[in-house]
Figure (tube, rainbow, N blue to C red):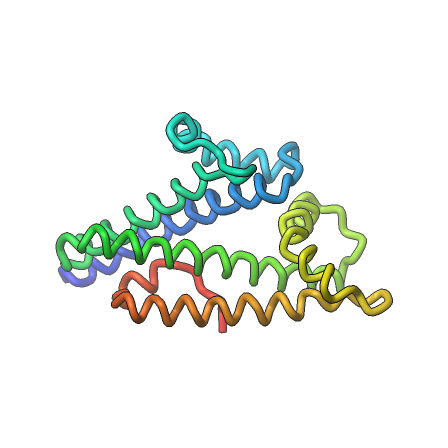
Length: 201
């Protein structure tokens, strides 16, 4: 029974934590992509993240146009998830420095998973509803454009066919595998690994 309550506690913590981490990473991507902040979905993300992000921005300034406060907040959220899961699972206080490294890797893996799934959604929608003007799809295109743009400079579209997503998929998969290798080298427990999102195959 104790294990059951521990598992439920870890599940609730992981669900709430990953959803907020998702929002914080989207906030970071919004800033990086210079996406439309008046988009209703953007406004929702801003409202969710502002209570913690505003005071943090007074301490952590931006750097070269990069929203460093969002990155720091994402790292803190991931660290709290790891430490909290350790307590709830009965592992006690995990090493804070190790947890910080695992948090960094977890944030990167989650960010890659967001991009990967976002690309899949974008491609599927481009086949079934290419002219859709839904706010979510407009925002998704804006968020993915900074990922596609550098690849297009090297590999231009073949006529009307944009093949840049293929190479981005390959790159994201390679980076994800490298991060998994780093996580294993850093002795990341399976409990911690399962807290974060990953490329779905």
